[in-house]
Image (cartoon, rainbow, N blue to C red; front, top):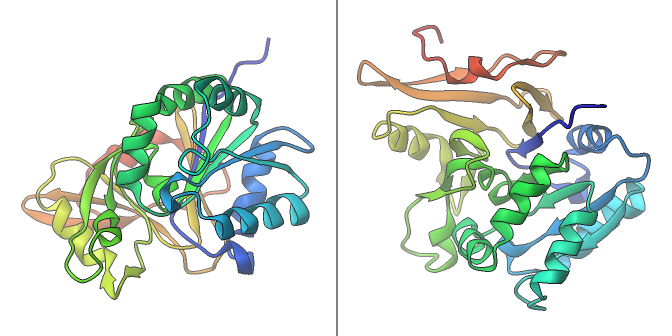
Length: 257
């Protein structure tokens, strides 16, 4: 009997309309072990934005030749039975970007968090971008407050599902409303004793059981360990390898940059 693998792909950022994450998305499809996988898109963080849903369908269904369904939790308020059916049917669950705080609150209220955990244990490929990347970690560096007040806000640390250890920062080489991610995440990690996992736009980390692999769709895109040692915050690039590596490597602190 084949062992069921637990698979998560956390994407730091990128633009699907220009096929900016194509290499990563093809990797995700391959992980499903299905010729034509069922992809479930969950756009809760974008408040079920119709345009976003249309772009995902055009990209994953028309271009990448998958079957795409969408789970609208805010616009349609589906029954728990329907939510469960959609999640169980999926080979790949793709979570979109947006307001992480809003998404996590609603998921916990509806019990989606528990259904996603079961799907993960059952071998469904869980993936997502930005907020859809943060959600799988213990917590993440989020711009959620910008959705409530675009003029006066601060990055916050939002609690995730805890399927992957660490504090995650997507868009590590990017910014929100002209406020850079990198410097603020480093300042956040100055106050935290754990390990930060930062991912640039057009980069991703795949977590497969107790292994990991960095995948990039752009030459200079990288992923980083960010942590405090002897009072100093260190940002160390994570090795990109063609083979899966032991995930324990990501949680070791050392002085080498």
